[in-house]
Image 1 (cartoon, rainbow, N blue to C red):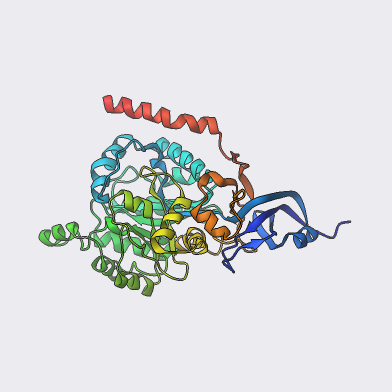
Image 2: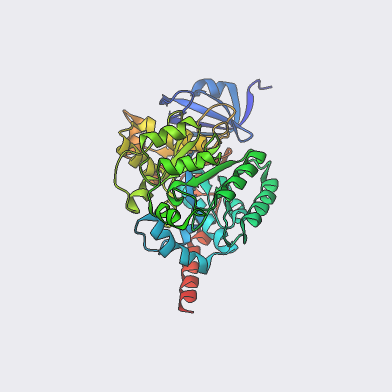
Length: 437
């Protein structure tokens, strides 16, 4: 009788990048997986002797790292890539994106768009994403097998989901009860700043989030610096002003700046604004490619310490859902090493979503959300630099979500590729017909 411990899978890459507890590169190490979780990490020979695995996978020229985290996106917008993209962001949202959304937005649009985006993210090594959808229940269902943090939209004005702030909160609480114990889907509150968000609604969101111990995320560039329910002259001036410390002080006054609050940034925060976020224990998500495409000036990204900054792609209508490309740009803008940049794309994003105890690094006990990249002959030397500055998403060969293969040797196992390929054309025809009508 074998005395070895049972395991579902033993992965033996050439290089292993655990991110934590040590942000380093290990050679000839392996990862043992059991029941969807990482059972052990160690030298490959030792783990072969310790575990009797049902499957052993050797990747002789590959690097294994935690699955990438897309900490901010609008996944269903993968069906809206025909929209012209030009900044500034508020004008693009109001004049280009919003009118088209009003024509096409429906539950089946969210379902199809999210499935299309989920497949694209898997191919890019992304195993977890944060999503803001007009129909969060559809996004939550369509995201599988990825891990998803789904935003619960709350606005003062009618949306496709609800007609008032009260109705939004009622639907949000009902959905919260449904997913309270779900191992794959977590929920957070996402106040909708455009075109109006009162302080009263912000306070209500904070109170409900406190009761449920829920996170709150808000795109700073979408929030005016002063309450829109104040005097008209002040409100108009505030709406035209760039966000900054005044905006963050407004959020702090409402009790929103705290651990569990994520600021999604569309521009360069100054030192005093970063200090305000850090002092309140908030986290930050940067979307560098979207920032540049929507007209932001190139410059160093704002970064918070202690793994409290993650990377996102913003709306799928803006560009590819490619966190590896975001990582490269972040490294170039901030002068980061490959290891530092990959930490933003993994543990940083997991921390921003409140999931660092479960994902973001390759440590025993964490979920086996992993990505494997084929580096060919390009991995010698600084492996992390080779990943960040040389590899593209086409190098992603294998992806596991909770220990189950979602991408194997470059082939999707979680979706019907032919069915997905037909979705953009079908929706393009539908959009064209509606536009003609």
